[in-house]
Length: 114
Length: 113
Image 1 (cartoon, rainbow over the protein chains, first blue to last red):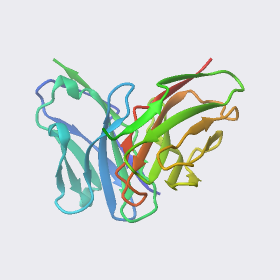
Image 2: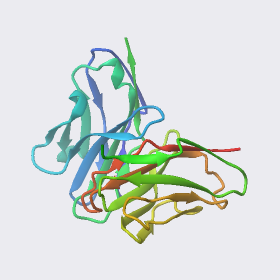
Image 3: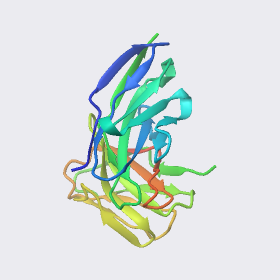
Image 4: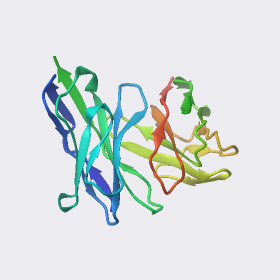
């Protein structure tokens, strides 16, 4: 069965430190992958997506993610975290040209200390 | 500006009452979705619609109903049969069901009195 795992429920970093949020997936078909960010009480905003091509994807707000097929991972990174990055981050996986629905991970809450 | 609007931001339901959550989009998207979000959980799909006058049950459709009479609108009714309705409800849309970059509205928080 298709699944998405975000192993870290809660991560705390200092402002200016680097960040990596983990996402692992299990999917039979060729996946397409997303990272969304959610501020408290708000909807989800798309950070970046991977459909095909270059496995290193650049997104908004200085985020990037790398698709590693051999590891079934799509980890999100940022070289220097800002206090405004504190939010909850969701990884999602679907199948291109397929009627399968998008599957979301359970989220990682990021806390940033000054 | 194009986008998705949800109303109200907060909604209170009494026991035995049906309530309807509004979702409107002006993105000219064919597909629309309703998700439920509970603390510590990911998003769970309630219903989705690939095109006007058509919709399908998602993973947790029991106690909910929808309609899709207009392309722009996809209201969700939480019926009295939904015994645990307290949650954050998110509406989303995408260009079509096969190109699944979904764009989300700001959400409605439903509370039970």
